[in-house]
Image 1 (cartoon, helix red, strand yellow):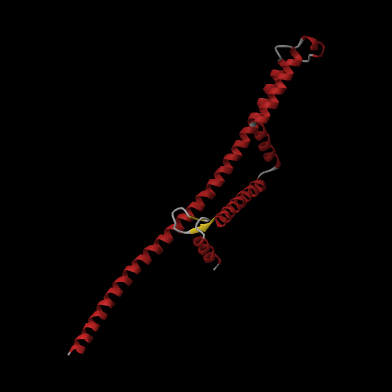
Image 2 (cartoon, helix red, strand yellow):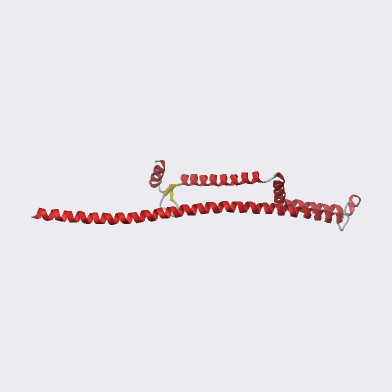
Length: 195
């Protein structure tokens, strides 16, 4: 009943009403906002469910590796690491800090640290990518199941529509035959009345 009032209100106030794409249904802007909010809430609940499922299936070291990989692939890491390298080179390259140098040029200790970082960061990133690929595969299976179910529902609705169309044609033929019978009866009654 409330939906009927909303549609009637939208028809009474056309500047507030708009039409659904592909349908001739007038709807008010507040209803569109409500529908958008419901869709967003539904999407968030699905994402939260997937996140809870991911959290329950992964161990703490896996999640730690994911956070390390996430930080290692960010601009924040690039900026911090660039600043660290610049500070290292400046500190160990200036003449007035010579008494405090711990890694003289050609920066062998820095090279060792970079190799160490690369040796440990690469497997962590690869582990995280493997888990992300497994998670993406799981989500794609869920998407496939949803799409498959939607396809079955669409096929079912199409079969119902075809049945309704067929029944409508049969009913139309039946109505035509009944009208022709009524016409014949009326003609016979008129013929009797004319005598």
